[in-house]
Length: 473
Ligand code: NAD
Ligand code: UGA
Image (cartoon, rainbow, N blue to C red; front, side, top):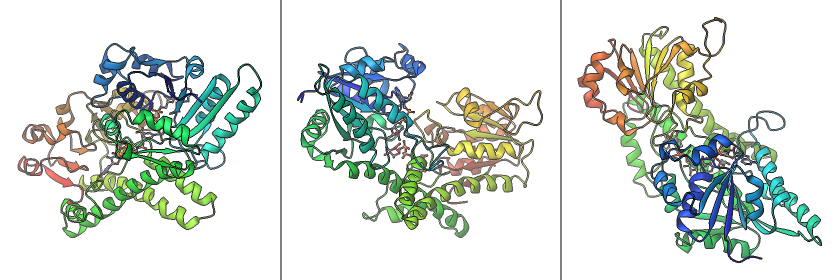
C-alpha cells in the first residue's frame, strides 16, 4: 500500500468538490489535486481567468483558487486519465432524490455514484483509496466495495493488478461559509474498516486540523451520522418556525423566545432563526432519505416522525404566501410584488429548494406580477427555477408566464409602483435599505413582509409602510 498520497482526484466539481479540493490543495502543497467533472461548462468556469466567473460564489474562495489553480490544483473533464493517476479518489457527485421507480420521491438516486464507481473500477491503477464525500444512504459503501472488489479480483494475477480501500468521509460544510467551515471544521469524520487507509486520509486533514477533531468510526456510523446531522439541523428550524406562528398569534416575540431558550447550554443558540422555511439541496433530500431508510427497515413511527419536519417546512411557506394575499385585501391579481432575495440563504448564488421559489410560484399563480432582485442570482437562474414560459402565443400554459415576472439588478427598482415587497433572503444589503426612499416609490397602502427578520423595523414603520415580520406579526 502507498503510504504517501501524491495525487488526488475528485470526481464532481460542484459545491462540495470545488471548495473542498481548493482547500486541500492550499493546505497540502506537496499533493497534486485534480478535480474532474463531466460537465464541460462547469469545468470551463472553474478555469476562467476572471475569478468573478467561478461557477460557485463563496466568500474567500476566489483568493484560494488564485493561489492554487494551475499550481497544484487542476480542473479538467478528463475523468479517465485523472482516475488512473490517483492514489486517492473523492467521490463528490450529486445524490438527488429519485424521481421515478422504487423509492421515488424519497430514496436517493445513486445513479451517478454507481456510474463513477464503475469508472474507477475500470481506470484505476495500483492501490487506490476511494472516499465517499457525497452524502449517501447508510450501507452504500457496500455497493461501492462490491463493484470495486470484483474489479480487484479480475485484475489479480494480471500485469495491471489493482486494489482498493473504501472510506466514508462526509462533508459538513454549509454554503456561504464553505471556506471557513473547511478551514476550521467542528470535526472531520472518517469511517472505515481498516486502520491504515483511515490513517492516510487523516494525515491529509492533519496538515491543518488538530488530530483530536478527526473522528474515526465504522463505515455505517459515518454514513448515517451525516444524514442524522442534517436531520437534526433541519428539525431545529422546523421547531422554531412552528413557534414563530404561535408568537404571531400570542404577542410573544420569536427573537426573545429564541434568545431565552438558546441561552440554555443544553439547547444552544445556533439554528434558532425563524424564517420562510429551510432551503438548499440537502436538508429535504437527506431527511427523505432517512424516512425511506426507516420505512425500509420496518420502522414506520421513526419515518413519520422525521417526515413531519418536512411537512412543517412546507406549511411555513404556504403560511407566508397566504398572509401576503390576506393583507393585500384578499386579491393580488395584477398587483406588483417585489421579491428581495432568491438564493436559499445569504452569501451563496445557489437557489436549489429555495423557499423563494415556492412562495413566488404561489404568488404568480394568484395572478401577481413579480419583480425579483438578488445580488448573486442571475435572471436565467430565476427563470429556470420558476419554470417560466412565455404566454405570448399560448394563453393556456399552466406554468407562471415570463410576462408576469421581471428581474432587476438594481435593488431600488423593486419598490417602483409595488404594492408590497417580500424579503426572502437575509442578504446584508436588505438591512441597509433606505425605507424613506423605498416608500416614496411604492403604491400605498403598501406592505413590507420580512420573512427573515432583517429589516429595520423602526425605519420601515416611520416611512409609512405596513410591516409584517416573521415571529412578531
Ligand atoms: P453538485 O450537483 O453541485 O455537483 C456534483 C457534480 O458531479 C456535478 O457538477 C456533476 O456534473 C458531477 N458528476 C456527476 N456524475 C459524474 C461523473 N460520473 N463523472 C464526472 N462528474 C460527475 O453537487 P454538490 O452540491 O457538490 O453535492 C455533492 C454531494 O455532496 C451530494 O451528495 C450532497 O448531498 C453532498 N453535500 C453537499 C453540500 C452542499 O453544501 N452543497 C454539503 C455537504 C454535502
Ligand atoms: C447544511 C448544513 O448546515 C451543513 O452542515 C451540511 O453540510 C449541508 O447542509 C449539506 O449537507 O448540504 P446549507 O444547506 O448549505 O448547509 O446551509 P444552512 O446554513 O444549513 O441553511 C440551510 C437552510 O436553513 C437555509 O435556507 C437557511 O436560511 C435556513 N436556516 C438556517 C434557517 O431558516 N434558520 C436557521 O437558524 C439556520
